[in-house]
Length: 114
Image (cartoon, rainbow, N blue to C red):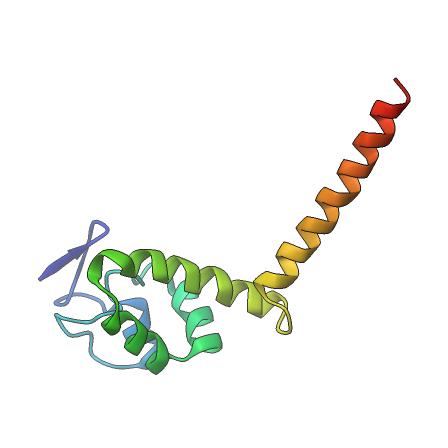
């Protein structure tokens, strides 16, 4: 039995990925360490945007030490794509850049009147 974030996987409940995909969660499940059963929304959004098969291939190709960061990026991008299907993260970055530009302009104006 393997321990994942304080919860046991394998003999108990399946990880969020296996639960959503309605399959048995094997001991060597590549999803289990990154998609715990108590966080089903993470895998649901990643699966909706990228597909389970593509995520599985990506994780299998990455060294274990890089998988956690990859999953974090996939979850972030998937959530951004769910909110903004056309631009995803780029839309959020663009919006933030516009805000920074506007604030810099306001700051320059305020400093000019000193």
